[in-house]
Length: 195
Ligand code: DGI
Ligand code: FE
Ligand code: FE
Image (cartoon, rainbow, N blue to C red; front, side, top):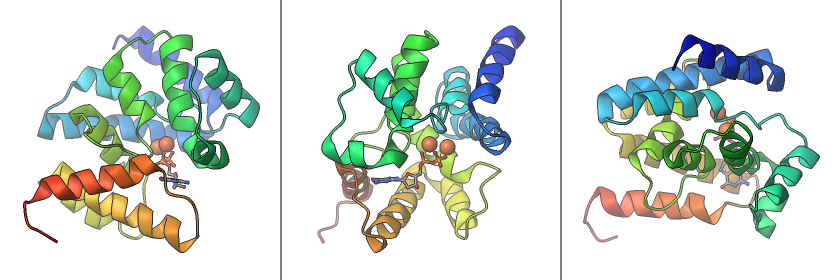
């Protein structure tokens, strides 16, 4: 990315995000590059995807719903009622249609960065894990998932998904079908044992 583009995108991020989440975005972009170097992936695209992945995180309901309506993203009932999920698809459409970054790799990495999905692409997996292990994160198990991410992206995904599913179900919060599909798919592909 040119310095001009970097200044342009970080300028937009600074307008839309708190200092803390702006810093998180820079850290996730760096983690994306590291994971691309380790596992293979488009570094240039993934730096940008990491930078912009939470761009709609602090947008209000009106902004999110009007973006989705304008660009034809139809939310399911579960999605409408789960406000933490909105910023991922809304961010993807914002980046594609408003910032005019028309790239399917960046689009799908941002769209699925919160839930994951079945049959994730390499770049989707990279952003999904980069978001869990970025330098600004300091939740209890962060070291466990960081060390898993040094060994296998899929092992880190299973750990992260299992943590999220446990946390949501403990609090009786609905689990998106893509989250469950991602978990099942990753577990089933990891080995061929019967359960
Ligand atoms: O945006 P970040 O905070 O960096 O991270 P994120 O995009 O992974 O969002 C995490 C939040 O999303 C966390 O509060 C849990 C919530 N979440 C993740 N998966 C699901 C979910 N919420 C619902 N309702 N269903 C899910 O499957
Ligand atoms: Fe997010
Ligand atoms: Fe994030």
